Length: 119
Image (cartoon, rainbow, N blue to C red; front, side, top):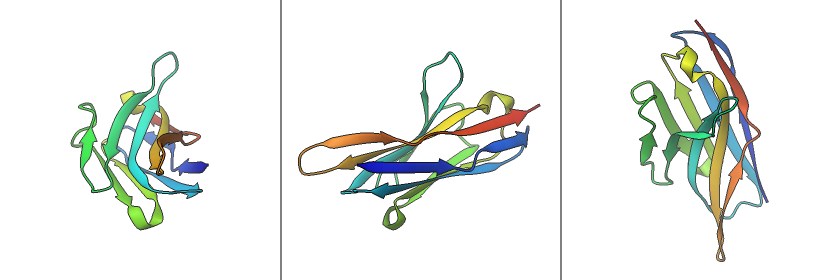
C-alpha cells in the first residue's frame, strides 16, 4: 500500500502564491505519473496538472501560465507552485500518483489540502 501526504494549502489573497507538496511513502514499487486534482462542493474532481516520471507536464487551460508542477523521483515528491491565484482556484487540492508493480498499476490519492483565495 502506498500513502500520499499532501500539504501546503491555506488562505491567500487574490494574486498571491502557494506551493503544495505531496510525498509518497509505504510499499512503493515504481511511481509513474503524479498529479494534482481539485474539487469544489457539488462538482466533480478535476485534473489541474500532471507530470510523468520523465518530467513531461500537462495543465488544465485554466491554470496554464500560473501553475507549475514539478517532481523529485528520488524523493517520490511532487510540488505544485501556484502563482497569480484567483478566487476561482478555491478548492480542496488532492495529490494523485500511480504505482506500478509486475502485475498491475494502481492509483492512490492524498487526503486533500484546502486552498482558499479571497478577493
